[in-house]
Length: 225
Image (cartoon, rainbow, N blue to C red; front, side, top):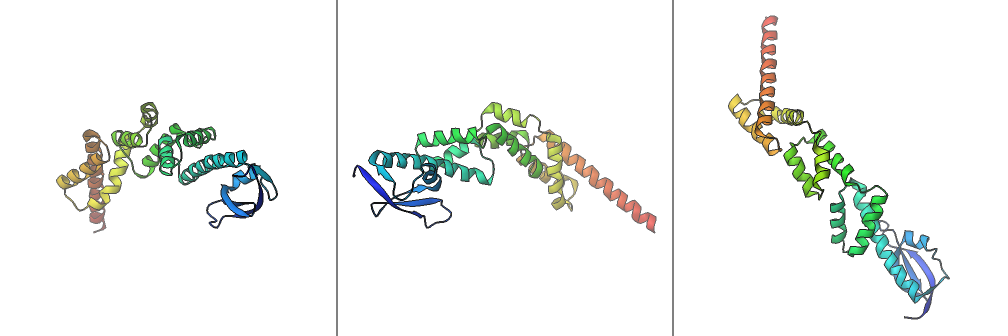
């Protein structure tokens, strides 16, 4: 490689979703860089680059690409640190680049395992209630440490969660008699991570509510006659 080269052109990459620029040195395409890096390094046509500068730009570009990949991964929803690290490994980035990106994302508070655990638990509570057993297993799969998991799930109201989960499922079981209703709804709740006792109380509560509603409906029909 020549000791120095002149930037003769900087062109936007063809893929608009990938924010990169193509650099031409001495009239020939040389390499591409992340747009942020082009701006950060104040690169422009006519600038002279040494061989050392070109090598340094290559290393800096890898770091920037790694960071940007992490940012895109986190743009969809919160992620755990372990999930993000695994994603960057699959993208082929070097361990040193990954660790620097992880630390950068943590400084920006975009990676926070405690916050992620709370998010996951609250999301489950709202849309797909889980028992503590299954919730802990899910968070372990996300690579979270035991103390972080325990802190996140300690406020889980299993009785209320089991009831809400069962209430949604019970709609599809409304035509069943009690033995089958109890068996199928109880099995559903135990697959959701609720233990037998909690599941049984939720099933019993729903059946009693269903029976009471049926009795009220029957009484109302009689009064109309």
